[in-house]
Structure formats: C-alpha cells, structure tokens
Length: 205
Image 1 (tube, rainbow, N blue to C red):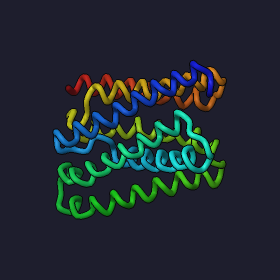
Image 2: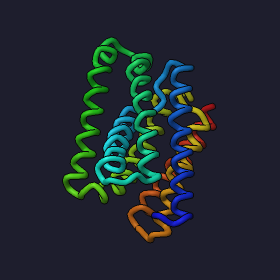
Image 3: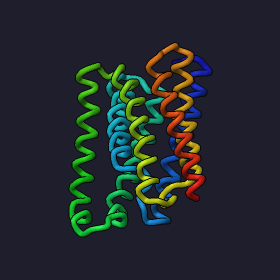
Image 4: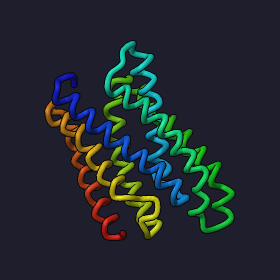
C-alpha cells in the first residue's frame, strides 16, 4: 500500500516489531533466557529472511517493508543465538537438555520448509501476505503457551507484549482499508490473543 497512510502504518509496525526484537535480545541476555518461543522464532526468521531477499534482490526494488524485513532478519539471528544459548535453562530433565539443540535445529528447518511451500503453492506475493498473518496467529498462541509453561514472566516484558500487539494491529488496518477479509479476520484473532497475552502477563508480573 503506497499511500501516505499505508506507509505510516508500515513504519509504525516496523518500529514496534523492532522494539519487540531489541527488548527480547536485551531481556534474554539479562535474564539468561530465550524470549521468543521456538516456532515463533523459526517462522519469523524464515519469513523475514526469504522476503528480505525477495524485496531487496529478487524484485529489483527496495520498499519500506523490505528494509524492515532486512533489519528484522539480522535481529532474528541474535534471537536464535539467545535460544541456543539459554534454552537449556528451561529444561527439567537430562533428556530434554540432550535433545534441545537438535530439536531447535529441526524446528528451524521445518519453518523454512513451510515458508518455501507457501511460495511454491501460492507465489511469493500472496505467500508473503497470507503466511504472515497465519504465522502471527501461531506466534500469539505460542507466547501464551510459553507464559503458561513457565508460570512466570521470565523472558517477557510489558514492552514486548504491547509492541507485539500494536505491531500486528497496524498491518491489520491496511487490510481494513483494502477490504481484505482474510487479513481482517486473522488480524482480529491476533488482536484478541495479543490482548489476552498482555493482560495475562500483567497479572503474572
């Protein structure tokens, strides 16, 4: 969406999601914990890496979204480092600790494979849009699961929660403007789940 309003919404989303990543890295290092759930991280780094390539190199033009994807991809790399460095701190058995690295690698491979399948089946333009909203639902559920699993706010902050909430809401508004029912419906689901996550996190804290 190349209108001034559309560009503003992309910028707001970019700033908010960048804040999620930066605060996740900061909090992860400080608390020695990974902050982004594994499959959320895997889907993110796969999506952002693939579409950073398409936007910057594959399509021959650089858009605001392409710049955001590129920045997010490099931040994702740091998040992957925090996962492999600190995920064992959440393990409760020796078997979990032994399998943690291999399971993490397997999860990343699966996530890349899913993103590639979306492109093969739907083409890169449609895959970029629809996979993003579907994985946002998966991410929202994963954050709630992580909060429940840990029974604490370890690795989570209100800044992460509120920026994630707003960062997903703003592109949903683009769907409203463009009258895209899929984006609106999936965006509403994310909005409800992210709101629930924010209030659950506030209660736990």
